[in-house]
Structures are given as C-alpha cells and as structure tokens.
Image (cartoon, rainbow, N blue to C red; front, side, top):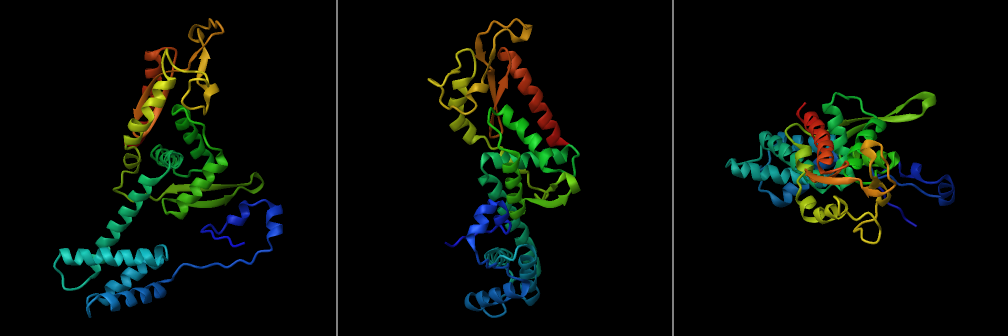
Amino acid sequence: MVGISNDLTFKEKLDPRVISSLGEEEIVFTNYNVEQIKKILEERINESFIEDAVEEPALNLCAALAGGEHGDARRAIDLLRVSTLRAEMSQSSCIEIEHIQSAHKQVEHERVIGLLQGLPLHQKLTLTSIIINERNGILTQTTGTIWETYVQACNLAGMKPLTSRSVSSIINGFHSASLAHVKNVSLGRRGRTKHVSSLIPRGIDAIGIMRENNDAVNLGTKFAENIVGEDACISKDCSMWLENLNQRTHLEGGRNNTWNGTKAAKYNNYVIYNNLILFCPGYDENDSMKNCTIFIDKLEEAENN
C-alpha cells in the first residue's frame, strides 16, 4: 500500500494500533529551494523566450520569491508568466524587477481570492471567526476562542457545529494554504494549543468575498421557508432536511412562563446575511427579527473595527 500526503503530521492522527501495523518506509519530498527553482525557470526561459528577454536580477527575484515562500515550481512558472504579460503591457523589451514585483502582488491576490471563493461553508465560518476575533482585539487566538465564535455562527445558521478537533484540522489547512499562521504552543500540564493569526493580505476583503449570497438565495431559501414561521414543518415526515431537527422547536408560552406543553417552531423568521441563512429564534416574527438584528449589528460592528 502506498500513501501520499501533503501533511507531514499525518501519522500523528492515526490510531497507535494502525501505526504499529504499517511497518512503513517514509519518503519525504522536500520543497524546491531557490537555486533549484532558478534552474527550472532558466530551462523554461531558454525554451520559450528570445535571448536576454529576462534580466538576471528579475530572474533572481522570481526564484527568491517562489523559493522563499512556498518552494512550488508551478507557482514560480506562473509568476514568470504574469510578469511576461506585465512587460508586454508596458511595451518593455525585457522582463525587469518591477514586472516581477507587480506580478507577484497580482498572483498572490488571485491565489487568495480563489481559495476564499472555493472554501466549503464550515471553512468559511472558521476563517470568518478568526478575522472577526482579530477585529475585536483578540490578537493571540487559540483554537478554543476560534471555536467559540464559530459555534455562535453555526447556531444562528441552524447548523450543527463541527467538533473543536475538526475545526483544529481546518485551521491546520489554513496554515498549509498560507491563509493563517499557526504556531503550536505547549501549556505544560494543561496540554498543547495553537496560536493563530490571519495571513490575508491587506486590500483583500476576505469576509466580503466569502459572503456573496448567490448560493444562499438560489439554494437555501426553500429550506428556510420549510422550517420557519407558524406553518413550519417540525417533524421528519415533512422536513426537507433532518439535521438538528430536534432543536427547531420550543414549547408555546415560554415568553410568559406559561408552558402549555405544545411544541411550536423555534424560528419565526430568517435573514440572508452574506452567504449564510440565519434562522432567527423567537416567539413571534418580530421577536425573531429582533434577535437576528442584534447579532448582525455585532457582526457589522466587528467588521468595521
């Protein structure tokens, strides 16, 4: 059996009984260094460019940026490609340092934006939690503080939160993708934790990119209508989705402590906020909207800080 992983800590997540039965031989393929990337770029330049089309300082910078940041030859070649377009647009006779610098900014922005747009929902919620915590002044974030904010968002969205361990794995993925810096910290007898900070470049509105609401409007509205209001479906016989079904009800009369034992819909309104559908808990439509408005105000206040 052959296993391939980009995660060097993969074995640590396996059951000890599985590890003992593997009898594995581990081969680690390291990232390219600056000199290796420069050699790869030189071979491409010799095959595809006219002589002296790339200045030596520009080539060195291209290799240094790629080798120092990620060691990925494909991204180095892409950086050279965008630099070529920049040189053509400026009608330059060769690729110079400024072309590499401007191309690097463009490539990094496009990479991050593409990652943000393609994140699954729970990863979007986790990354949004990191950003909101930072804007609220929590500069040294742990997995626990991120998970608490993430759970609040899931509860309002009527979704079952992932476990803290699963969120921790998501955060590790952000580190691998250079969306967040993650540092493992020992707490002595209290175990270990992670210190996390966002690496989203300045000028990129990460929350704005992740909150495009086309999916929520086109795909989610019918599900929201199914569980909200006086005619909401609160049984598995008519519900369009069964996740957290037992958490969608409360007893009538709860506002005045006059419980009558009759179950009623817990959510009497909903709001499409960014690309999330927030189910608003309350005893009537106005009460529900009030609760959602309070939460949204806090989110927007955090975004503006």
